[in-house]
Length: 102
Image 1 (tube, rainbow, N blue to C red):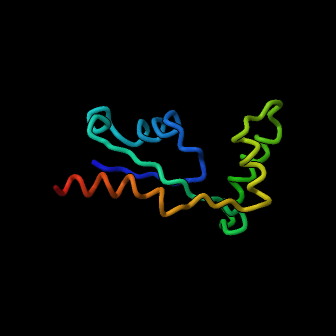
Image 2: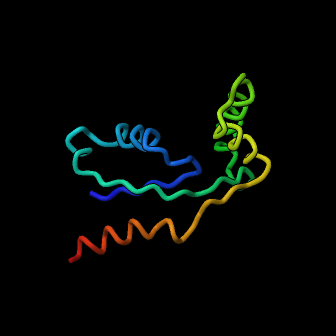
Image 3: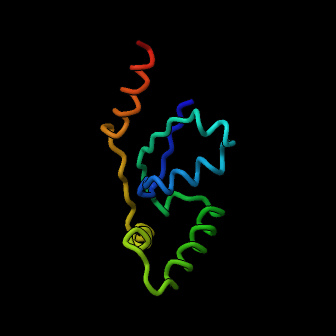
């Protein structure tokens, strides 16, 4: 099974593992090949409910005494949209799928 994830997070293995663990059983996980495609974040394009949820996260991040580099970057993205989308990022996934066809 091929699973690709998208988002504005860094795509670190630990982050991906959490998502996979929450969405697939242990037997399914052994057959999952994952790919992370970095996306972006634009607070202004969110609907009311998602803005509400993100404001809770923003409040929690601002209260942290020692935020990580990633957390600081997320706070900055509330004011300045970020976009990490790159067509090059999909090449690994495409190569993998093409090799399955052979």
